[in-house]
Image 1: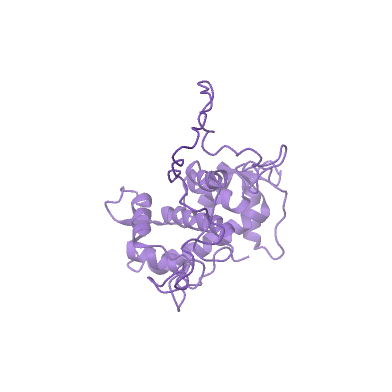
Image 2 (image 1 turned 60 degrees about the horizontal axis):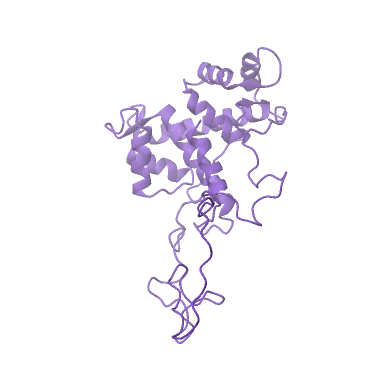
Length: 281
């Protein structure tokens, strides 16, 4: 397996040739419906949600106010399931538990013997699974030093769990993906400084299939520049962490954006389960 992603500049997030990704289906300013059509979509309430109710007609009997209950909260906590909604008892949400057990795996057919040997050296107890520290040592001895946060992101994205353990299949995917990302980094590090600046990062992400806006690009550089944004440049290990973050969030977003429109709807829980693993890695 060559690892995700392929160097396809037309990948998800890249603007298509006809119109920018996520652009509206009709020209800006065009009427949303034919002239003379109702001003509201079919089935919409007669007035905006939260608008004041019309006053009672003159002479109508006054309505009785319900008794006040000072002990009852005015609303449910934010994110709490509404009455009659939410997941049934004993049933998990669509994202499941981020701490689900790792499924045992084996090396894919044709795996490079050096990759197998690297895994076996790290797997000192012969269990067929290595933890985060063992993975960090294995990658550092073969390629370059990675922070434990980068290792945690790698493990999360290639196992989809936060158990921080990895098997032969996932290790092979990690290994080959790092090779691809290393080649991508060196391709855009044209002055061989060991760093890439904001423009080079934009080109690198575009080649991986991610078209980010200038605002997002500035945030990425500020986050992953070891000098706190002073140098406006990212070194290789931080470049890997940056790619993992963009890749992971994009893939989670695509799970909801099934039509590739650039828009998605998340429940509160789904949003938290999407973002938090990248914050606590």
